[in-house]
Amino acid sequence: MYWTDWGNKPRIERSEMDGGNRMTIIADTLGWPNGLTIDKENAQLVWADARRHVIEACNLDGQHRRVLVSDVPHPYGIAVTNRFIYWTDWSERSILRVNKHTGRSMVNVCANLPNLMDMHFIQLNDTGENKCASHNGGCSHLCLRTSLGYSCACPTGIKLQDNNHICEEAPSSFLLFANRESVRRISLDTSENMDVYLPIQDTYNTVAVDFDYEEKEIYYSDIKLDVIRYVYN
Image (cartoon, rainbow, N blue to C red):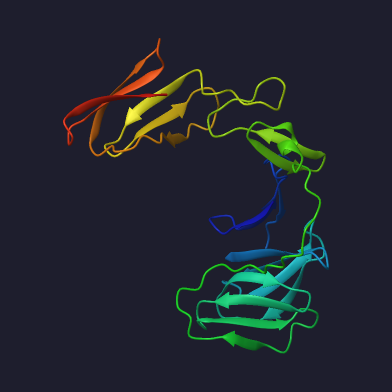
């Protein structure tokens, strides 16, 4: 995976599909690096920087950085084909393109388009090897590509068993809380501390919640419906 971040420290980062081996590959001379795409034909990254008004490229490891297009007002989303670079521009309210190999021959492809955001180039016959194609790689939930093949991962808050393929059914310890319109859970088995929405239907003003340890059931009260209900965790 490759992504941009234009917060206090603008940068371009990459990691394997499972989040491992994360590293920063570009950190200098960046303003608002918005859109980012991979030019597969030339094995390079291409991104748009709206603050510096340029479209740039580099190798997949961050080396050999160069400017492809200058003086673009406010580029945002970007896509690359075998011939052209396309991008959306907030100031121009347009989709524009240039020749990928020369950075010239700019064309306004489509104008008068408000609220332009991201864009992608889709080529339906563009397929590659899928390491997870056979039985989901043996993973019970998520199969994620890595440089060594793939790794298995679990939904938020769920631990992976020692076999590295099967996820636990549910967290063994967690916080359970109500916030009026839903009941949520924070797993204490993992370090994310992220709350997960529990798909309990017809909750309108849920104010109290409890748990039956023996039956593994969640009890909650809804003061709009004037009911006490339970569901299986």
